[in-house]
Length: 406
Image (cartoon, rainbow, N blue to C red; front, side, top):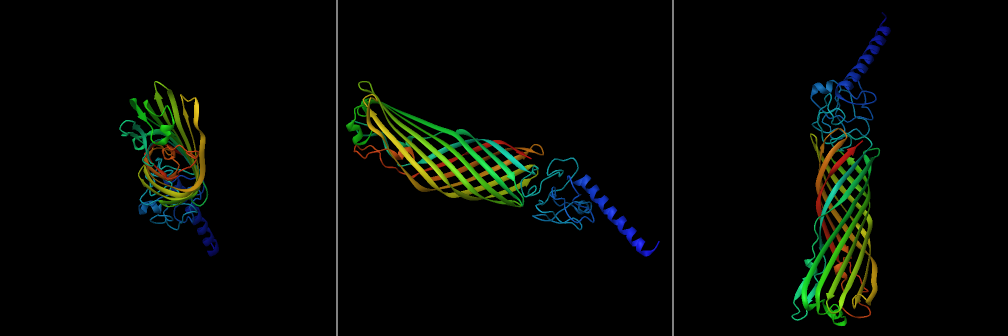
């Protein structure tokens, strides 16, 4: 056979052997819909499933790919495709469900997204249990009219942990980016304190002296409630284990407070305050992700500066609620506010596409108009017409739910 034909024939045989080696490597060590992502002579990873962690040398020789974004090594003659991030320490094997055919996770699947496979998006839903501690001005609420001793203070109002919901929808984009939409809320906190007396209870200040039902009462009951809603849209960019996020956030906090005074002789009347805080603004944050076998741990921190559109409205009635002593007075203002929160979350992969999740969350919100801070026990034409946004609130609690990845 002439030398040119020998060279051509040898080239054809080499190319065919390399192609067959790629396909065999794909069938045994990886999962992909397109060209095989490894093996001697392969020049590039498959663009859709180039997410293989490095293994021993004999794996690499059969098409196990490393490289790019935290991988320890490349397969022979190979490189990772755009967006293909491998984790360290993982190895592929037949019939397992982690990382689309891998027995164990490296530092992250794809662009660091976690243990379970994900190609297009993810959905997380949790039951979110939050406790709340408010920091408002210390104010007397109920006094003994004979001794002027304090019977009840705003610091005695304490909320219990309440259940709500949190849901996150993530839509993956190109170049290791994703859009995340998150909502949490539906928590309704309620607190009631009752002080019993015998024609000797009153509220502080001149307001009690000018009224009938709030002076020398038999019982004074204080009801305090709050409701929260939070929505946010973030762009998340992931590089191996670390993600950077930024976006828009809204947080709404409404409160209701009622002081009900009851006297056998005169009847029952109310002092009612309603407040609303609507916070709008941008936020930035970071997220650290680590996979250990089927377990995925995430630590997220974010914060931002916000505009708070705050308002308060109050009225006072007397003579068994038959007389409007202070008729719908209030105020509104726009002020700056700050939110910072921290969360740790752990997930356990149950299948290739589902995991159980649980974690703990902390959130601090400042410059709020809290209902107790709007109390005004004076008796002037301008009483109850101002607004205070000096309150703070600290939220903390645990979450438990599941995640679906597609």
